[in-house]
Image (cartoon, rainbow over all chains, first blue to last red; front, side, top):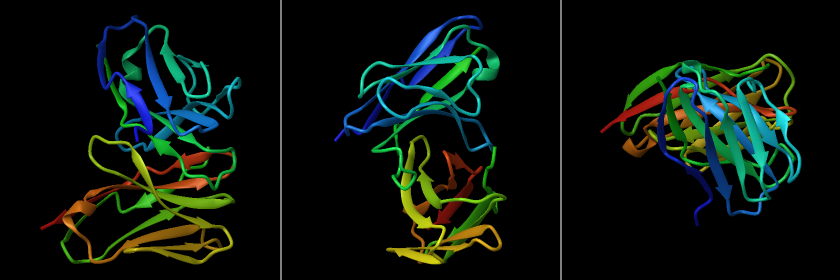
Length: 114
Length: 108
């Protein structure tokens, strides 16, 4: 059972480069999320998609865009990477919108921007 | 936005001892969840406690919630080396917001 799969696992970019982080889940979940995790700050929500066809901003959306490609896939794009975006990025999914459903996480993408 | 504050930030114990960590928050919640994160991995859901519950158990885990004090605690009993991880509380309101975590080291 794959669960939530994120690619790539590691990436190094130069300032100004663009890239897309991929996320796919095989649990038929409706909701998907992108977080970033910085030392000592826990996880902060970047964007989320409550259902296929919808996306909404989270706490720290500036510098990012997302696409809910279909029910399985939710990608995060950095159009012009900045050193402040160096972080570990986690994708998560949840069965429904109800907040009693647990979130299921991928193992993260470690992104360094030089 | 509201975020849980966890205490302590780090905890080191011997195998077999109990580990207790706390989460405090400031506004109303629907429920509070605890997650574990092993080094280099994603978060894994451990347990959920609703706002109308005071205590919940799951295996060696015990969670309490005191809504009057706006605080929760997670107790891991008879800890094992495999319990070494970071533990996060997550507050469920309109969205799920995570605290900064408690790093737990269980020494064999």
